[in-house]
Image (cartoon, rainbow, N blue to C red; front, top):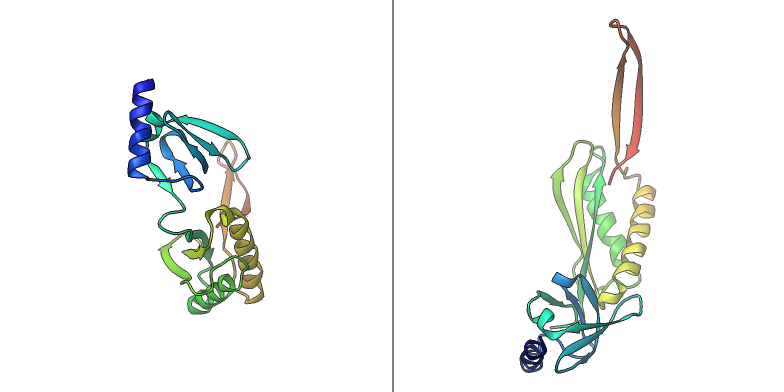
Length: 187
């Protein structure tokens, strides 16, 4: 193991799939964070919850590594939502794009994509994509975008869909009970 870790460490140092300071994800280990130090036998990573993880270089060499810092720090974020069939789709698209562009943390000069994905049972599925300047801001910016979209779509009278279920109750002996409707919001 020591020899394997040392050889893997040399390969990492020469090949440089990541460097100290880069934000990475080691897929097979489900580990992500900022690279603190690359040693001959192990790499130290500082996680988002502020924990140091020491990963043997041989484990890294055997895993898929995603580098969120290279080639640049820009990172694309996306969210999905449903648009009611009664809404004007072009109005919805422009409202969504304008709203996302105005959110703090979204890069203004990068495109905002509003992609009509599919026809659902009770809504049209839309995927919204935008760019941020740093992977670490993903969760906060996603929260701000979702909140802004919720407000903007409601103000524009663009309904978010509800799925309605009809429940028919039949008692023993063939008697039909009352019809009940249950609503639950979908996205």
